[in-house]
Amino acid sequence: MRSIITLTDLRSARLLSTGRVGLVPTMGYLHEGHLSLVRRAREECDHVVVSIFVNPTQFGPREDLSNYPRDLDRDLSLLEPLGVDLIWMPTAEIMYPPGFQTWVDVETITQPLEGTSRPGHFRGVTTVVAKLFNAVQPHSAYFGQKDAQQAAVIRQMTRDLNFPVEIVICPIVRESDGLAMSSRNVYLDPEQRKAATVLSRALQAAKEAYEEGERDADKIRGKMKEVLASEPLANVQYVSCADYDTLKELNTVTGKALLSMAVFIGKTRLIDNIVLE
Ligand code: AMP
Image 1 (cartoon, rainbow, N blue to C red):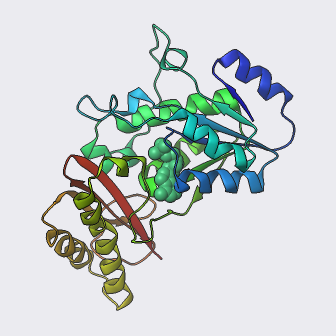
Image 2 (image 1 turned 120 degrees about the vertical axis):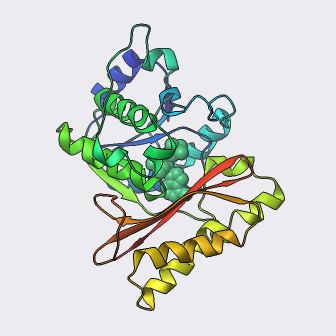
Image 3 (image 1 turned 60 degrees about the horizontal axis):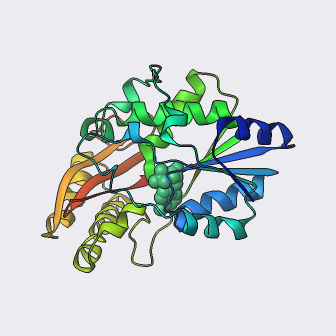
């Protein structure tokens, strides 16, 4: 496993890699969710590249960029046994040199949900992912369903800009009590950590209602809100029952739907989702 920083070193290493190249983009502080993507890439590719880059342009001015958890040594020790070939850890100056002024902006699908709560977030995500694709030139790239809208936005960008990259979306990895794994879970104190299970409980309750025949999207959203309201530490930002492909809010669930939510537990913003098929 080789760790490199500069674009020149990355390009030289890429020229030497043969066969199918898989890329797993991350912001580090790795957990089992990230590692599941790496394992999948390892199964499907000859050469696995993991990028670790806390991308400043996807954080809003009042978000947690400076506090975002980082532990590079730990990340490297988690990746080593998985047979990763290359780690690319560019600096912010490498990704955004002075004078940088070109952005990738995906339109409609970035507007609702996270787009409403985090203006500019997806412009940062798509720009950095486009740069990662151009630099690494992977055959496939691995993302998590945990960030459902991000997955949809990246699929859209890849189609629209003709990137020759297969986008692989991997299932959400959860803690044993249902909390979706996230680097941000480290911010939660023990009481908040307990309260945080309310997201997956709300999704589960809505899924059960759906399985019992409920198709009214308002009632499904209501079910999630009801469970969230039972947790005093939870401050709901949005609750959504949307079309899986367009992410438009539904009146009635007829096809594949995405149930998703963003909830503050204290100062920590958590997201979670589940797909109704
Ligand atoms: P991040 O480091 O938060 O940018 O995440 C890097 C990648 O890991 C993204 O594609 C995420 O969707 C994915 N990911 C994060 N948490 C999970 C999880 N609990 N299960 C599956 N994938 C995840």
